[in-house]
Image 1: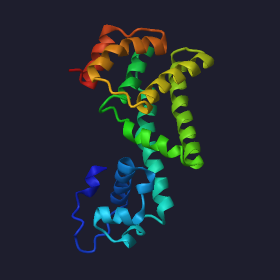
Image 2: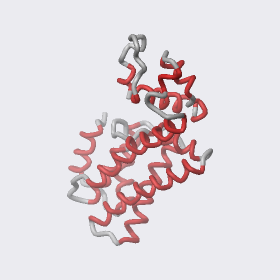
Image 3: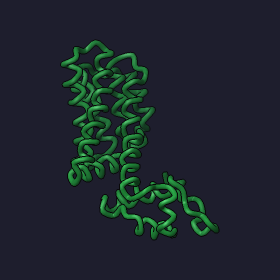
Image 4: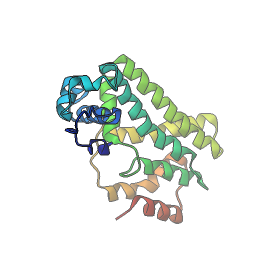
Amino acid sequence: MADAFDIDPKAKGWRGSREVWLAAARDAFLDSGIDAVKIQPLANRLGLSRTSFYWFFEDRDAVLQALLEDWDETNTKPIVQASEAFAETIAEAALNMIAVFLPGGGFENKLDLAIRGWAHQSDAVAATVNTTDEMRLSALRAMFERFGYSVDESDVRARTMYLVQIGYISMQVQEDLNLRLTRIPNYVKTFTGHAPTQSELDRFHARVGKV
């Protein structure tokens, strides 16, 4: 959403846009937490009047809801798409999913961590996070079922895969990318029961840019 700030805020009569205000809210949230997402500080950040905010959002709650929707769109959509992507084997399907959580894969770790932190302060946000987690798990379960796993086994394998990825984020694991890539074949075997072939790994490395 960085391009939202490209317009000169001093342009005569410019009130910003929904995208500009949401981008400012997102940046404030990621920088300082949900308590930093307040209308006047956002206006100050943008160099706009407080009243300009109300052209695009009814109130603070509306922009907070927009932040949740932005998170869902940003971080859930890539998981669902990867779960449905073409794969000849379950190992290749698992590699498709793992790629989502690597740099450039579409999933924004910092945003997910921030939302989960917010959920500790709000029962309503926690309920939204739980619903979203279930949606993501459902996509993963369907991926395993597509390759012949039973419903029960698909559920456990989906949870194993997803909770490992979220654990990386929640623990803020600092790990060299190449080190993580060397571990991926064993992760795939753990998640699926099948090791990826060398050709599958070669395609995966070409996609994620192994150095």
